Length: 446
Image (tube, rainbow, N blue to C red; front, side):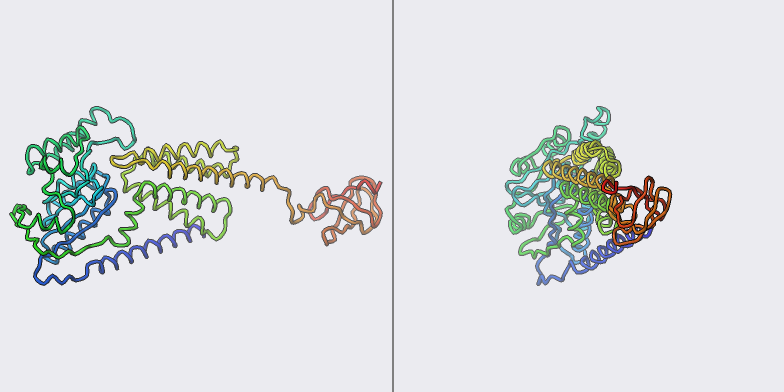
């Protein structure tokens, strides 16, 4: 119980410190900008899956732009996709923003996949850098299997309606392509997207973006506005350290590593109880891993298989089955991770996944074998450790009598089972009866 209390206290302190750091950095994240009359553009840069981190980051950017009377917010985006629920919240936030939001898919090589397609179309202005791509927004079953035809139709109809509303103001060609992106996983290059009217401009960098959009007309909350971006001053708003941390762990490879470290920590703590450092670290890693999996919109089936796999690893330590449970745990771990990471835009990190599963399997087999050897090892300390040792007889005594022997630097009362021994002879400790050793004659005593 004391150990559990220590774990909870340390975890609470850690989360409190993280919260304080996040609050402090948020307060310092927006230093004053001397614009000297020029327009201010708040620039956000996001690279990663669509999670609540992006929603909060965008909310901070819009609030900062409103406070500074900025001309626009630029969201420089590179995402494989993510949660549908979070995407809906982000698009609603953008559509209701009091300042123009420009979504800029950049740098070259970036993509606005899956959920990123919706976010790009929701921007008051959509732009892409050369060499970028957009699209493939069709729904995928989070469990990795085929979606039931009825459910497939319902999901596609809902997403089709949403993306049609977002693309409607961009023309019929943009609407047709957007529907194909949902229904047929259609994708497009920056050049193709511009020709179809899906985006407004292709810009090599921010300066090029400002130059092309200077004088561009947008509708903000039903009101027509003209972007005045000539000689605009860029105000970069970075992710706070806490947001960077959560964005970093919301990655399939990092999440699987955290799962491994967490499991190893708990196994070490259970196998060799001590101060609790390994258990505390393991618990924190597991909580962070499950947080990351939650941000990735992980499936319940995948989570359940992961829990089963981790449970089998732990069970192998306490129930030696010569690797049967450990192998089952590795299989469940791999299958669970595959289901977790089989999301739109997310690829299964096979090298990291197989490496972590192999590490868990090897460590569990090693710890289990050591535990089994320790259980079968003959005691070497205390009274049990005297069994099998030679003792010197202090006084003559016969079978059924109690005498005195000297063994391991100590005098012990001893009882002889058979025959008789004389003072100075050697006897062998055969057992223990309370505080009396049971001895037997050795061969050289006749």
